[in-house]
Image 1: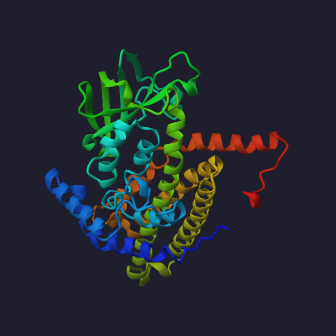
Image 2: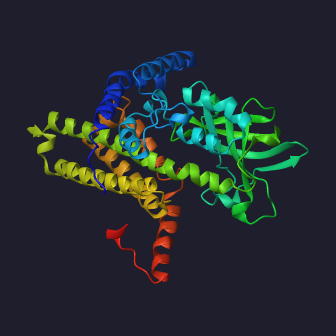
Length: 399
């Protein structure tokens, strides 16, 4: 039975994570995001990571068998909601590598598991993932052009990727490449592990997103040679592996968005109760009350949709309809929550004196990454209509 309540057994841990974020992460956010000296940023981040480990908060959602905290999926969902309040917290608490470490654990050869998995979970190396390309609409990944040809015992990779997030600090990139040019579209691609120090792996630039360099790199693969053992999983299974990575990942995004929205909501309500205009607190004005009401409604609705999708996944369902619904609705909710909070803050809201302006940039991007709104709307509607075409009904009470 679905419940919005935080389970009693997980509430103390969730509270401990929240206190860590408020007491340790928030005070150094600006330094980490704005300091131009990489070594200083690295020292601050490493200090946070060490504190998280010493307090038993590190890599909570990673399976125990690969060195993580082993939290069950639904328990981790509630914790991840808190982690989302700060973009720094993902790395500080070791949750940033969850999708990539599970992908390695499931599909990598023994050699690459031995080389990367333990350091990845421990936060000693960082991963990156290369799928999106600048020359094609990557919302339709069957168009991806980067190719890999098996020549003797090596894959030779050529092409261009961008939004390879984290590549600048990563030990390797998992690249989705076309290896089966004559196969049907969804069987034409494979995943290959490419160490970032491989000759021909060339980082061109850190692509600025809404004016900020946030670690989304453009990478050219110029006759990159890697051993055939670098193949991740079977040939032609790139789409399946991508879905295994992206499906649960979208739920994690949506839970983190709830954390971001909660933070914006808290800031908005605090401002409404303490800022005066026209002789009374902002919160006494009807329009501001409408902001509070609408935001509370949307956050709670989004939370229910997200928990429902997570529960379906936990029960072994792919939950593609539920994921599509929450990916679109959650991104809209996040944008609205932050937008209203900025409005209540007035000019202050668009300055660097609050986290809202940076959160707003990320919120706009949420409607695009991991599948644009339009793609999720189209695919989700098609799946629902297919139920009716098959002579059934989409009974919400039975979902």
